[in-house]
Length: 181
Image (cartoon, one colour):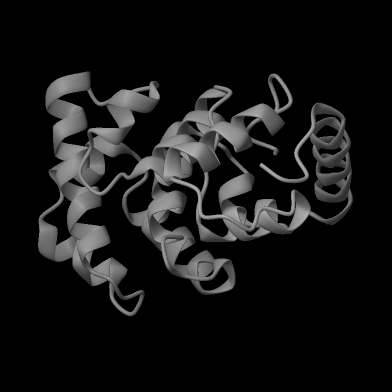
């Protein structure tokens, strides 16, 4: 990869964390960072801007404060609270995953990337985000925005496979700070 070296990684990571410390937005899912709240926020944030998600998130976690409550709710109730946020498959997957979590994991969100990835509606980015934010695992979360930034910072002009982007992002992760990163 053009422009890639370990010193650049260390400098980039430190600068990004410093910027985040100074400029992080006050978002409701950051107030009480439980695995459930992280999961709900990450699903809601798929293809939707944070400013749009914020009031829906607050309303959703007030109505469904935990996985058990969400799993027991009728799908129609979940869809009603979701109404207006769009991409309703996300709500259906969230509900189905909550039921699976209750059945397979005793109502506790699984804490490994692989188990998260196996849940309905959870792809590689979402599994990485939940694993790092909710459980502190050093796992990258790579989406289109991350790929664009990495391509610019490291002068990557050739196409990379999704796993190659994840490998690069993993090299950048400061140990124990993946969630902040």
